[in-house]
Length: 203
Image (cartoon, rainbow, N blue to C red; front, side):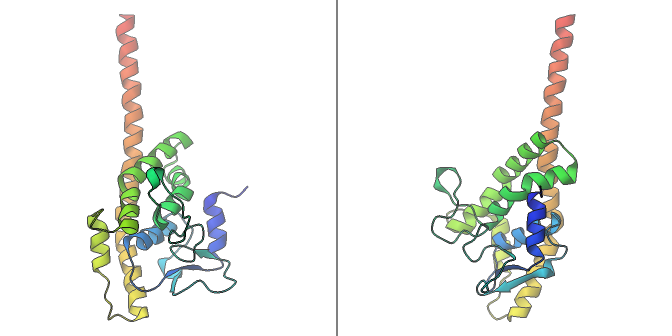
């Protein structure tokens, strides 16, 4: 049975699209996740379009009202009625698998690390994208959004989209790794505390 990453990778063979025009942290970070997880091998594979082409059977995110969009009525929500954005939807789909594959940890550690990264990082990005920076200010989102220029052509915007995605890739990888390390260190600390308790009981 194919994994979620394999399913998306097969979809991506038929094309990968997101919206054109102004880009935000949501679509930039989604692009990075697709790259580091191996769904695509290069950010340049992503096409930025005004609408999903008819009969498109590839991978679309942040556009088109599909599984990895959040602009449509009835879009998937987190607890307390807060919507996911595209980044959060993709992270829910492949985050645990990415951590397990990359850091060779068991599924429980990977799930907890993915949950921590979601809580510390992804959720904040989703809130800013869905409900605005005034209500949910987020420095990284603001920095990315400030790079937009309405005077740029579509090609210039595409090049800038790719550049920012590639520039931020190592930062995102390190942030995910930190979440994984935190969970592993927490487990080690619990084991050490248990060993010390057992030792004290024996003496």
